Length: 167
Image (cartoon, rainbow, N blue to C red; front, side, top):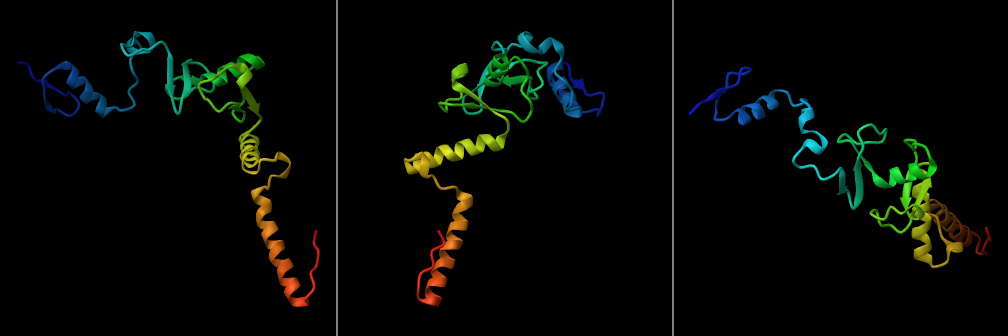
């Protein structure tokens, strides 16, 4: 039986070239996957379509500006870009109206200029659900001010004996 030796650290005990090459990769963890094993040449290739991160569909596109480190882009971003005829900026956010991240029908997608607008939309939606009447939702940032004014109102009432109307 042939025993292989690492020419970098002189470690012995490798019983195959494959185990030796895996050991050499440990010396250089930034070594890229060879072109012969990328994309459809890889035995684990599933057509460049993957479902991850809570149901989001990912598409393999190597040269897209919003790709991740594996070369995948979320499908809803690609569909919105197709609809607009341009790439989305880094700040723009695509929202699924029905809340289903796998439903990438263009009618179900909504574009926000930034994450603040997107978060504000969700905040309003949650308050509408809580109150039942969209015209009477309470914003959390006004809630503290309301409480502070209410305490002042009570304090003034107790000091003077008569109620002061701040409204």
